[in-house]
Every structure is written in structure tokens, then in C-alpha cells.
Image 1 (cartoon, one colour):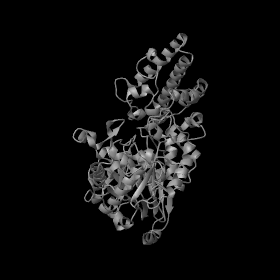
Image 2 (tube, helix red, strand yellow; image 1 turned 180 degrees about the horizontal axis):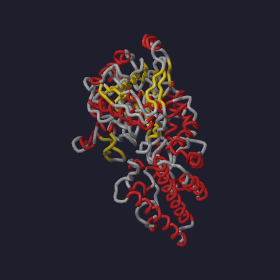
Image 3 (cartoon, rainbow, N blue to C red; image 1 turned 90 degrees about the vertical axis):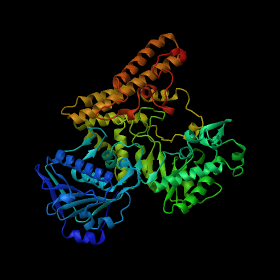
Image 4 (spheres, rainbow, N blue to C red; image 1 turned 30 degrees about the vertical axis):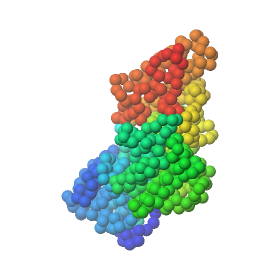
Length: 622
């Protein structure tokens, strides 16, 4: 969301002097890119200032042919024009560090001929490792500048993923500061590289000490306590369970609470507090009696609310994030108010879910944990949602004042789902952006002369995924033992991708590959799509042959075609891996770096395809 408004005295002062600056023309520029001197900045922040400056320098070179030097502010004469990045003395002189910017909010200023790109840059974790542990508002400001002024697009997190277009002249015009605050505090999950993530509004969540969803088992790890204190662990089906804890035990509750304090003391502003995955209540007499006849959902809400109240006293100003998941999907019935330091993380996010939570008072709002993508779903390593879901979901989130989004799964299929990933990021960053505009832009920038054929390819592909409804998986049922009907995921594949449809898709992709005047980057993007599409074709062929053999009563005459489909698919997968542990293409690990066996299996959890999907051809066991 772009917000234009005056910044008080700063705007008034600049308006009289700033209008336009020609940064580069005809392959030349008088500008330098200036980064702060290291003094006063954490070494990681300094590192990413330098990386952002280097990326900006490359973008200028590719776009205009001009080479802009990167220099430290301590060595730069202020009489020359420059693009300043981050917490420079130049930014401080304009009072940008006094604006009180929100996390990831940016401000861009033209002062005379100087351009200042600024955002709050903050270290949360004391032991930060990479950009995901930092708030880098200034680097985001650089990514916005590259997008809006230079026309740079980041289509994939690959060596050929950046798209630039040659321009003879780069001019930056402003009469007042430009301030940009994202609609969502973060859209995080699997990182795919700082510049791809920032350019597509997939911002990290460095303020949030998340455990990926579950903190109980992290607070009471089995490797530390199972042998010495077996009473800490839940009795499930008559036996002590290594991942579930006995919540009636006061020592266990104290360990969980102390872990929450520890996480806050590491520097996080938000800390996750949530039951272990696949939660199972302890069967011991004390747990059955604990908090009376309440269900385990009610018991967990009461335990977590009490911890949140303690946390508000012990760590004022910080927030605790409670997971609404499986047994805690629904709001508590015994009470209707949480402490004001509580954030609810919804793993179920229909309008009915939002309506139910809107009646609960006191909490500091909601974030969501989405299941849009992932090889754990029924589709395995094939597209899971059509682009049409994007505006529906994001509008739902905006309507219900969702603060932030965590993606469970993302990036397995940049060849087949790249347009969907790109459109999701673009519409998340701009509530007014049209879906077709983002999809068109992706195809035009990614494939150039082949864009029309690739748009046809993707339209045909996503039409197969468009069932009209996009229900979220009921992970509550799945985590408690309910699985999809045996082979139903293979039947889904066969329904979506019959031979005639695959032939149409093949024709569109082949036409794109034969388009004239493709450059090397466009060819490499096409080939990445080709690799994933051929995997999909082989998987659909194997599923079809297997189900035909199965449904015919395992007739002997249907076994040779099944063996042929099996051998072709496995040979294709072997050709992709060779002797490597990952499929590396274009300096990028495809299929999210999953090992050979995972691709043979077709996925994991609900995406696991049984029977003929595997390393061995053993029909006697199927």
C-alpha cells in the first residue's frame, strides 16, 4: 500500500528545492551509492547494507550501462550527488531517524540531487544469523526503489530470476517524501533469498520468536528429560509419549513458561506459546481431574491465558502468540477475554472463524498460518491452488484486520507455480493490484517472446486445479489419524491431468520453447518449467497405469504398461539427481531441495503416493 502525505517540516523544506534528478543517462552517471560507516551498526546490518548497494549497482549496470561506485559515507565528499542507503548521517540530518517508522515501513526522500532510502534497521536476536533475523527497512526501501524507478522485477530466486529492461535515462522525481507501510507486518515462511523475498513483499518476522508452530515439546525436550523425568511426558494409549507432555504436572507448566521468558530475553518482541503438534491429552488421573471436566481445548486455553497474564507482568511491552490449532481451533467457552498482550495465530481462517474470534475481547489481534502450498498436501509436487484464490484470501485477511501471514509450505514449484507466488506477493503489497495484471507481468517479464504461449500454458494448467472451492485441509482430523482414502491423491492426479490435457499443455510449452529471439535467462526459466512439467507428466502416467491395473483386478495384461510407466518415471528422476543429493539448476535447489526418495514418493503426509510410487517395483506388495 503506497501512502503519500507530508512529513511536516521535512516535506515543507524539501518541496521548494526537490523536484527531479537525472541519475543516469546514455550509459553514464555522476552518482555514487553511499552506505553508512560501520561504526554504530551491527556487523550483519552493515553486511546487508553492502549487499543492497551491490544489488542496486548491478541493477543500474544492467538497466542503463552506467556503473555507480559504492562508497562508505566516511569517505564520500557530500558535494557530489548520491543515493544514500540506511542510517547515514545524511538521513539523520533530515530527521528520518526521528519519524518513528513502523516495522518494514520505508521513506524515500529527494533532497537537492541526493536520494535517501531509509527504514528502521534493527537487530532482535542477540545471535542473529542472516537477514531473517533482522528488520531491514532500508534494504526494503532499496527494493522498492529498484522496482519503481529502475523497473527491476524478481521473478524467481534463481540466477536468472531477476528481470531488467534496458533504459537510456533514469530520472527520479519527488516533491515530497514517499512513505510506504506494508499491509502485513510479515509474510514469512521458507526464505528464498533476501532480494526475491523483499521485492515480492515476503517479509521476514524477526520480531517473532516462533517455533514453527509448537513450543511445548521444545520447552520439555525428550532428549533432556525423558529418561530422568518420565513423569513429565503424557501417557497416550497407555504409554509415555516422547512428544506430548503431562500438563497437570506443575514442573512441566513451569518449564513451558520459563521457555517463553527465555525466548523473550533473546530479544524477540513476540513469543509463541503452543501445544505440540498432533496434540494428545495425557491419560493420567491427575490430567483427567485437572481443571475439572473441561475438554483439552478448554484446558489449554486456560493454561495459556494464565501464562499470558504472568508474562504481561514479567515482560511488559512484549506479546505472547497463542496457536488456534487442532483442539484449540475454536475460542474458549469458559471465558471471553484474553490479556491485552495476547495475539491469536489462526490456522483456520474462514469468515466463520474470524466471526467467532471477533467476539473474544482483549487480545491484540490475529495473525494467520496458511496452508496454500506444500508437498504435504494431496497434490504432492503438483500445483495446489489456482490464482483466483489470491484476491479472495487477501481481501478476507484485510477485511478482518489480519496483522501478518505465515506460509506453511512455499516454493517447491517455481516452474509451475511461479506466477501464483508472484501474484500473491504483488497483491499482498498493493490492495488495488489486479490479478491478471500481475500474471501478465510475470509472463511478459519471465518469458519475453514466449509470453503469450506461456500465459496459455498456465491458464490451461490452473484451469485443472480450479475446483471452484478452496477449503483448507482439516489438519485436526489428519493429525489425529484420519487420512485420505487410499490412492485418492493418485485419483486426483489422474482426474486433473488426463492424456488429452497433458497433450494440450505440452503443445503450449513446446511452442514457447520454439519462440524466436529468446535470451538466455528466458530459456533457463522455460527449462525450469519444463523439468517440473515432465515430472508431472511422468507422475500422472504412472498413477493412471497403476490405477488401471488396480481397478481391473490386477490383470496380468495391465502389468507391462505399469512397469513401463514406473521405469520411465524413476529413470527421469534419476537423471535429474545423478549422484547429487539435490536437484540444482540455475544455482537453485529445485523441489525445495527434497531428496530423491521424496520425489519418488510424490510428496509427504497427504501427498505421499503409495503403491507403485517408490524405488522398487514390487506389485506383489501393492
